[in-house]
Amino acid sequence: MTNAKGNSPHPGYADFGLIYANRNAGALETIGLFSVNTSSGEIWEINTCELFSFPALRRIQGQIRAKTNISDATERVHRRRLSCTD
Image (cartoon, rainbow, N blue to C red):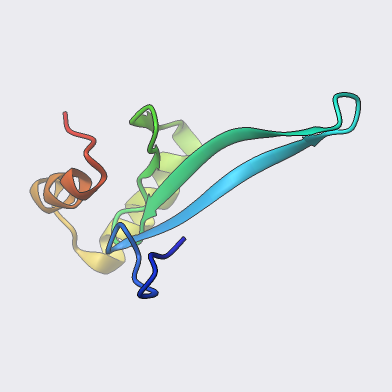
């Protein structure tokens, strides 16, 4: 997702949406809009500000954080770009 100038609305994040094509209803259903922090691996549903967390994902995020050296404090600053705060 980018704006009219080709810039991401959430710098430091990869944004994507999931849509389900419901053949029975003949319609598209939006599953959610998601942002992944490229430095921490945290995944957010940006409409509800739901943080995804489960053991396998936390292990992967630990590997990402070990490579990027992002702190929890820095990640919180990045998160404010999503308007999702703790």
